[in-house]
Image (cartoon, rainbow, N blue to C red; front, side, top):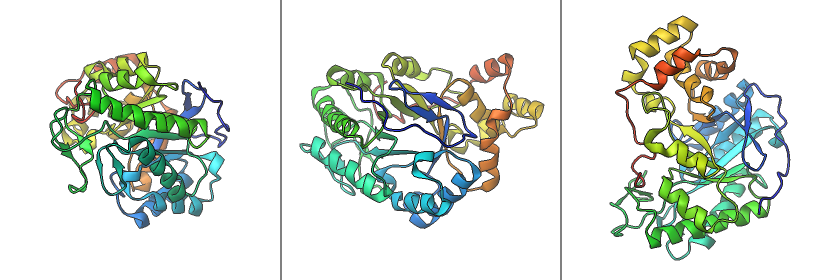
Length: 332
């Protein structure tokens, strides 16, 4: 059963917001700290402070990024009040995590422990959104083609997890019960998943009391508006699509694509701005990463201009930049 939001997001927004299925409003853009400042609390503190002062409405982090202490310090240094910003964090999939243990056979309790650790590191009593970072993985399991990690010693990300199989589905359901408990206790205003295929969403649906509010996955120009049907599957599950890597991880070929360049010139914008604009104009929130104040300002300028219908169609039909929306973590 859904619980009512514990507070409203009140900061005067430079970035618009959209409503989740429980009525909580989520900003359409967040600063991601999972690439540029990964495992570095010092650089994370600096970039979070600068981004919040520039006008970013919040931060997307994760237990596995090992920089949540830096996020907390950056928030404190910015002077922005907790109720005026959005915080997303994540719990890694159950199975092999050693850095922050989430072990097979202990998926529920270990997930709750990580939820508590996330709050402690972020120095808050609750976050706005908690996600399961990926489907589960266990080395040599028959239901996945191995596990990967970053660092390589922490093998938490599955390759082609078969989420409909009994064992991984049971692990996901146990983790989801833990997130439901955190949600009911007011420790997270919304809960969701990341890198979940349709079969993973179905597994959660089969036992959920609260259905995921968000499914975060890779989405950028060149993948089509509904790669592998995952946008449709996410919407059908009642969840909001949130895009990560909206700039295709800095793919030079996409940035120099003639159609993208022509649209950027027509608007007097950068190609990066055009690529981000396509995502948000489709109605999807996104997470973007930068340590450059100029790029922060460019990102925050997305809502002062619009792509026309023909430009959106051109970008939506662009070929040659296919990508796997879940990074091959589960079977699409």
